[in-house]
Image (cartoon, rainbow over all chains, first blue to last red; front, side):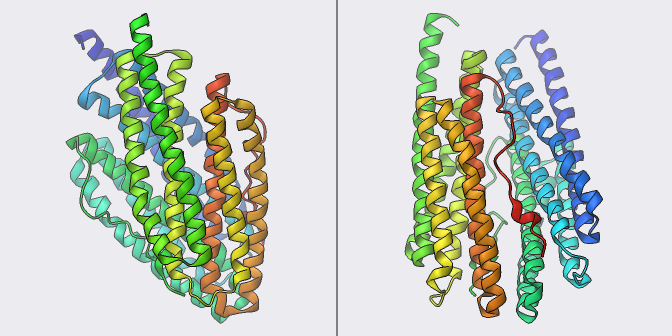
Length: 232
Length: 232
């Protein structure tokens, strides 16, 4: 690349990162509000979350278009090319996190007033943990800090363990009181959504590693959805 | 592009389409085997499905790398650029379909021998329908046929309706016999996986439309996960 192309490329990349920061902030907020809506059974807040999801979808399309055009125009190589590939991938993970927040919010309307408060605590805790992890990985991306990204990657185990314990807890409540089955099923799907948000957060962490080191993060992935193996 | 670049571009695109055809065939097979494994509680088959998932993951990385390099080298515009963007997106959907098949297969080990056969029929039907839809959309992509893609897009409603009816059916079984709660929960997640595979299939259909017409498919999306709204 010539000096001129470099400058133009840096500007394109800067614009891309600004879009991603906006997407990340929005995804964090959607996750926080969805957990809050379901925990407090706030239908109005849930509707706002559902309506706002299209903002994230629109930002993803913007990131993708800008990224592809930048590759076509500037023909970046090596690390420069990686920056753009990673931007596309992170946008895709953030879009999925938005979808999962929206699906969680939707369940607010299905859960009745009569839901015992204790059933909700586990899910609210998962929501907060998923949010902390997402915030940490977005900070790591903004700072280009692969070490912090790796810490997030390892911490996903905690979210998986919490999911497994909530899965068992909800099954127990269902068995004790079959009238709770329908509600607990919605909470199970809500908890599964949080677990999957954690997976997308680890995907982002892996991409930061790839961006900084140019290699794929190896070793045992922390992610293990052990509930799919829970014998019944 | 010069004549020479065009020829080189066509070769790159051909290689990309071959990779995608292999990925598609593999995703179809994984889906068929996962449904089969869970329906017949065949743990050995389930293990094969779990092990083979990494083949799809590897193909996705190959598609992505080849696509990005083709953009950087050939600087395609308009329809040529769309071909490549669409290849990246379809590879991403096929990879997710592979993940969902793997998650379904995993549940085979959790479901005991004592599971009443009637509980399984709905899920097996969903699996077959999801597979038919996937095959149809991959045919539409190979043929560049936006009309057939649109038909698949509309037919997803059927899969959603089936999911809603299975969701209700499983809840009823759980309420009638709390000993079935754990198993039915696994089947619920299995059915949800099939419903999500249907969503990825409609994503592929939307991308075929975009490829052929250069515009985003408008109108009411057929996808409606109404179970998240089912009051309990």
